Image (cartoon, rainbow, N blue to C red):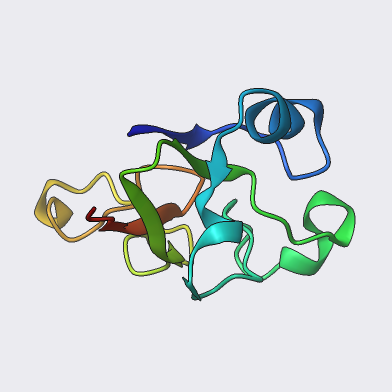
Length: 117
């Protein structure tokens, strides 16, 4: 199985997404997962302004694509517990280890289930 994930800056209406899913035949874990949590949440951190992000589409631009027949996406979600939702990034040395605000995007998580013959 091949897994490709990252910040594509491409929602499902873009040529990049179309290439990955239609041309290269990768599956989007978000659409194929049996369990979808936080599905309507965008993955760019907009601190409560989701309705104004991406022209109101609230779409995911960070994806996990996979190709192969040995496993399928079981669960998909946007992780909301690994960042500071108030954008209070601290440089105080006493705060090291307490603030995980390292990106302008929330992490996307996929749990795969192995398919057995």
